[in-house]
Image 1 (cartoon, rainbow, N blue to C red):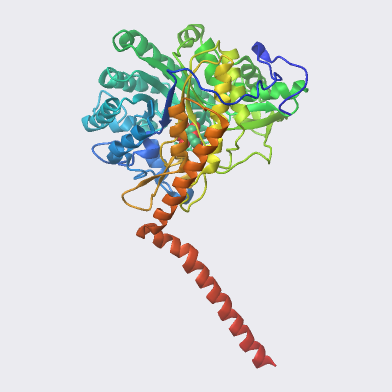
Image 2 (cartoon, rainbow, N blue to C red; image 1 turned 120 degrees about the vertical axis):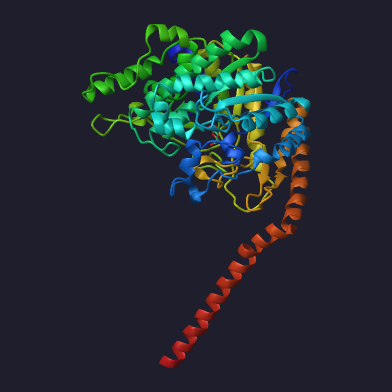
Length: 558
Ligand code: BGC
């Protein structure tokens, strides 16, 4: 379904049926491209109540029973707060160009508000981190909001449901520019606001866990977009001339491919899928307003539901011009793809963001899915998304801010060949897109370390480095993909097929021997014994005893 058919043009001229383009995969890219890894505060720092840090909505959410897989929390996680020096050494060894991390808002403003109290210890932590990155020639790329809103703001105002967040966020951002902006040149206002809106306020799977179906996500997004624009203007007016940095937003989107590319209904459904995902945020910041198709669908459905106004809020004319053009670069997070087809959701079944789109999502069971349930490896979708961004938003400067794959395995296996494959194929598609003129300036592998994977707790591991969470020192061990990614960085892409195979061979040799070393580690060695020896032994004994008992009964009966 991914090829063939007549070229059909969707709105604004993106061709859904353009051939995937060139089979030549591997080539070097010009210098100046930035390779990095990413992380976020709540997922890695731990130290949740240390040195004056305030409580965030994620601290509270994770402490509630039944919200997170196995009731795990980010209280300790990787202890990045204490181990950042070790982590920077890992990055240095990989010869990374940049490190993307986020600032925990309540760590520096415990009550959320600048007028109340600035926690200098929190400021010092980020200052030390930034200084050490710079000493090691690693460019800091800072996300201001990676989901950890101060709990006080949630309790007092209802969090992003309330417009007052715009000013609170602006004050927090302004403080970050003031304290760190002379050293930091890349700022990201929000990480994946789609997830904040949909999972935080619509389905409730994420903090703050609200289930305001059909309205919560739209309202949240509306305030986030306004907050983003305000912070962009603050930077532009107050700090840019002195600090000379760039400020953007990081949007995450899957690619949506029409099930049948010769069917206009499927093409339109796929377009809706992307517009409700990426366009929801990208269209306002690039063009000043929500995508037309969102306005039409949500407006029509709201009318059918007997509502006087659309559930999608409206930007006033002056707001549109204020929001339009508030991106120096687009951060793009991407993991996976869906096939999409038209499906009607009749009104009366309850409103929701999902029903508003009138579509169904499908996956091809042959796509590899080594880890998270939702994450199928579909490399060609990445190039299509990049081309879409180029054609829809006027070829903006793009930094890939997240791309990677997880594994579910709970036992220790450092030989992650599926991750090497995923990186190779996805990076390769990105390189093809660059070759075709998409303006991608950097790539960020997600993530440096295994970390707290939100509602999945520690059960899904995205890290290049394995973290042993059971050990109180939280040691990090390189998976094979560390060496592999390191080679991609040093070659600035892929040299040729033969070299690639030798990278993989070497990476696999190293991981096999580290696997053995790990197995010899007394702590882990013990854990493996429990599952590999003790449990099977106990089971075998049980079966034997039951058989003996059964024979004994049989003899008595005869
Ligand atoms: C989030 C990350 C998360 C990743 C994988 C991204 O959209 O920003 O924090 O780990 O998805 O689920």
